[in-house]
Length: 100
Picture 1 (tube, rainbow, N blue to C red):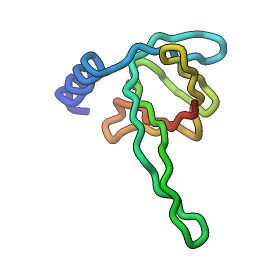
Picture 2: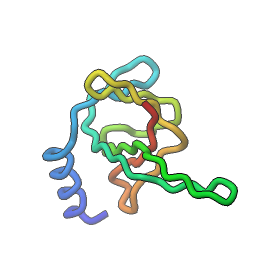
Picture 3: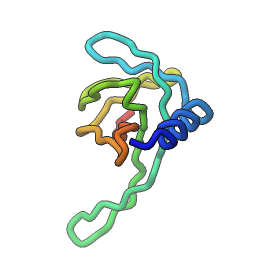
């Protein structure tokens, strides 16, 4: 890992990250998250369906091993992690799809 990437990620989360709680096994862990809502195109038979998704990113240093079913509390909303989170190329950020 290149230290400048870690510094850039830390600055990004410090400036743009939202304060949230990551709930796992009944324990609330304060984290900074970056919320994204990219549109996704899903093929269904011969049609394509355009649907919004909710993605969150959290630093690996904040959460060691997130998994499907964990919960993230942002403001008064609760989001559940769907599927297996994946790390970025430099193993600094977890990317996960969430459902409200």
